[in-house]
Amino acid sequence: MNCPNFENQIALYVGNDLPAGEIPALERHLSECEACRQFAAEMGECGQEVRMLAAEDFDDAVYALLRAQVLHQISLQEPKRSFWQRWLGFPVVRLAFASLLLAVLVWPVASLWRSQPQLGPGAQMLSGQKLNPPVPPDVKKNEAQPSIESAMSAPVTKKQPSHLRRSGTAISAKVKTITEPVETAMNPVPGSEAMKTTPVGPPIRMEIPTADPNIRIIWFANNPTESGNPTT
Amino acid sequence: MFGEFSFSAMMALLEAPESAPAQPLTATVIARAKAGDRDAFEQLFIRYQRQVLRTAARMLGNFADAQDAAQEVFLRLHKYLHRFQEEREFSPWLYQVTANVCHEIAAKRKTAQTVSFEQERETGRLENLPGGHDVEASYHAEQERKIIAEAIASLPEKERMALILRDLQGLETSEVARILGSSETTVRSQISMARVKIKRFRDRLKL
Ligand SMILES: [Zn+2]
Image 1 (cartoon, helix red, strand yellow):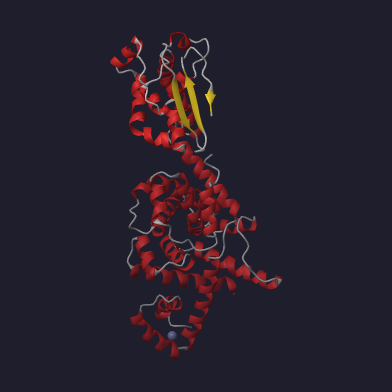
Image 2 (image 1 turned 45 degrees about the horizontal axis):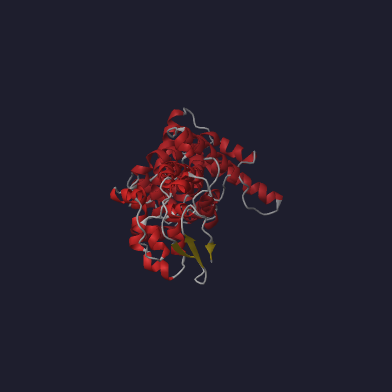
């Protein structure tokens, strides 16, 4: 029979939990007491068996089910998002909405421009040719009041002109896109109001650089009522 | 859908095999989870699911209660994660939540069920222990294992919790004391009594 007073100390000793100060006294007792040595050996075996339980685990399906249940409950607790909140979460839908919005905003400007097809100052600078045509009365009218189209073309002419004339780069392509009204003016739809109302002026030479520095699109437009032939 | 596992969560699995002891998560993942990032929460879940369910199963002694406890722990984790102070260690904090939930469930349940956890093993929900091919030796080991498991389940709650955290989860005595809100002396006392009781239980049944 081991000594009951030492049981708890031995239980801590085999698990390396006995405070350092108590170890020498216990070890001294163990060296003298056969019963307590036996108790300590069995306690050590028992501790090993306990620790073996730590290796047990549930299979993955149990954890998968647990996750599914918890995540489902969390999703039920989350505040319900509206139809629009849910759909606007998708980038494609966002892009579509943005495009639609842009189209709605740009449409009035574009249609206004179509009704005023003559080249604005931005287009003149793009062409690389200084134009001093006799300005028709309605053009003067446009310049007098700051129109939407001049507001659109003005930044382009200020920032980019010489650079655009020099080399055909990706930037020039971008500018082309920005100055969409210029293109619209250069390509009046046959039979449209734009063709009918365009004032007669001297020949206009437009030179548009492309991505290939060796290729430039030169456009002669003597009179918007006559069809201009693009020459490369 | 929420029930599906995200790619980032799967990557977390690849980085840290589930059988390995849980490594401390980066503060970033915890911060992201706190901010409501679903993937980060799943990463936390996967990293700590074993710690929670196994502790709860040993603590409560039966699978159904352990499952309920683990669910509750992770629901609370989701709900109160924003209160977690990142200067604290996450794992001990989660042990604390687990201990509290197990205590509540055990208090609701009048009588302790001590054998169901073993039944779960027999029905295949517990993975088999790595063992030899010797049938007799396997049977002997299995009997000893059952005795120990039942001995643990028969311990008073505080002793059981201290022993599970120290001997099964391998935490330091000081950590166990912090988690249980006790002094190290108290925890040492609980652990020593638990070990002696398990040995006596084992001695009785082995005779
Ligand atoms: Zn002795």
